[in-house]
Length: 153
Image 1 (cartoon, rainbow, N blue to C red):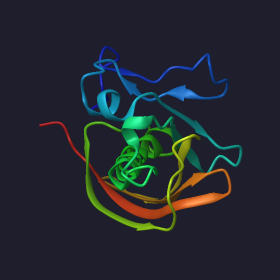
Image 2 (cartoon, rainbow, N blue to C red):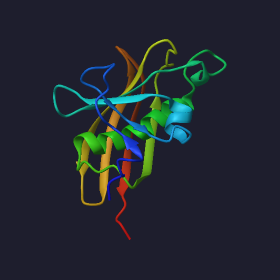
Image 3 (cartoon, helix red, strand yellow):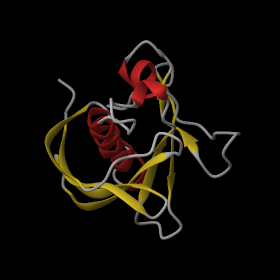
Image 4 (cartoon, rainbow, N blue to C red):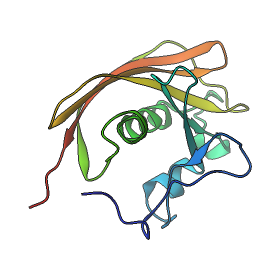
């Protein structure tokens, strides 16, 4: 069951040619209220998806780097953008079953933060994803996750 168009916005982003929105229309829900604007695209190789956020002051921790919870949220959302852009095309309704993350560096608050992902395997009920969170050549985290596709009742 796909998300209705009146709930979700994933059309082209005119400010960023080649990118698409990944935003809920209700900005009071988590994605908009916490993460802010999100955009996504499929990389030129056709095997990788990229989800980008634009850090703000509210995303920093006391050390002046991007809070780990923000990075984890970007990773979790990227599992679903990957399903939508590279997989079966239906990212909703689904749930994260497992997420394994290794932090390898601090995220800088003055530049976009990207989750770059690929599908390892997709079955009728599960999607296995792996990826990295990066800022240009700097790796912030690597991760793998499993998403369970929910069936309509």
